[in-house]
Image (tube, rainbow, N blue to C red; front, side, top):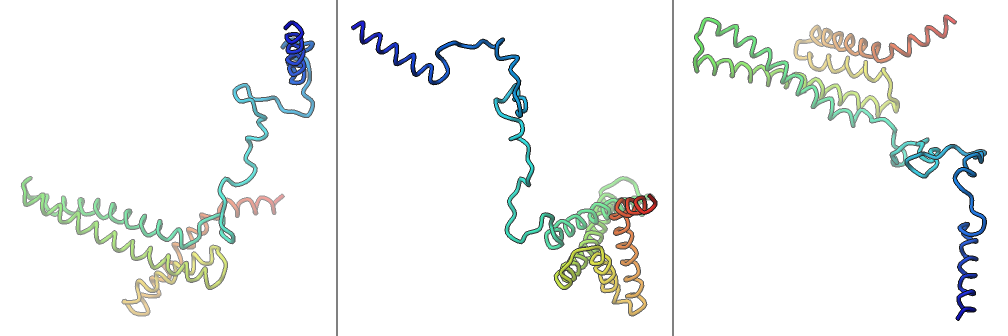
Length: 209
């Protein structure tokens, strides 16, 4: 029995030595001064190398041929919806102002409240329809021009804005279409200038140096 016990102890000791638990042990004080050459210090909270936590690549896997940024077709839904909501909010405020102005000589009563409410809803629907229609035309022209040219740049923005203004005001004849196109050209040119302002400023500074 004793021989068997000694044999078992030897086996256990051998396995413990193999896994580093047997033999001459080292205390934490002995291991504290050992340098970790070529290794970053481990996180005190996670027993992993922080280098493996750094994301050097994109977190999302894109389909083959897809762009990293949304195109005009994807942005069209946001543009149309945002313009409709903005127009409704602005129209409601304008309708409230007009309603209070037109009923200022009336006492606070049910007929006055109904008239103000009617003005608010009418103006809200009018402005929402107007801005939504403009956004729809602009987005449609932008997508068509982008697919036709095969490129996405500020030229598409200016061209889409100009064509949107011309089509929206074409009921007023050539003069109305020209005015609408000029308004669209001006607004989209200002937007393109604002969008590229930092890039233009950096280019000017580099040329001056």
